[in-house]
Image 1 (tube, rainbow, N blue to C red):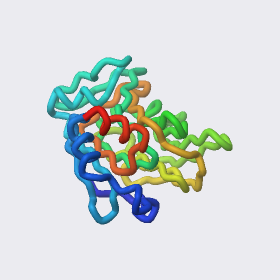
Image 2: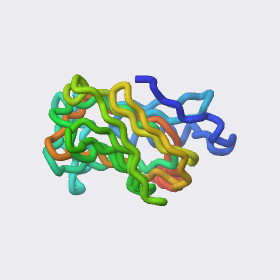
Image 3: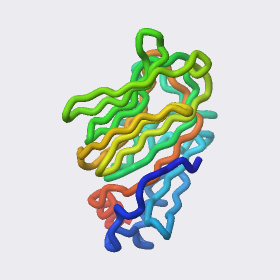
Image 4: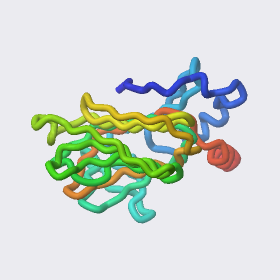
Length: 210
């Protein structure tokens, strides 16, 4: 999974993650942590095969059940424990039907939603100014194992579904914690990768604790 287009230029020299901070992240989260030394971007990857990875996705404040994937029933929401300033998320998801929210940014309030009258539409929903952009996919793309992308920077918001993509210039501040949803029919998450700049306050807090 390497379809990330966050610009490394957004990181100033003093924003780079230090060795002690990286060590604290590795002790805090269950995903596979790495740091791109050139860009300074943090990556946390989940193959969602290990039960302990459920500790990083909370459903009603309890760890999600991970067993050969993370299956969220209709209406269920799991919140990733890391708050982000800017982030790109890529996931492989089993989609039975295109219906309901897939991802939501807790602070900027941007959403990636699937649905429409024909259950064949990708939506980018933006809170301020309130706006919805959409694109209709082909019949062959309406279900199955799909690649989902959700990217939030200080200058734009983007959603992707298979080969389809929608983006819009936005100035919405920090992304916050990313919620993943079960939508209207249930979604099965096979893998998820987060890549970006974590919230400095969170980073400072976990480093102090470690």
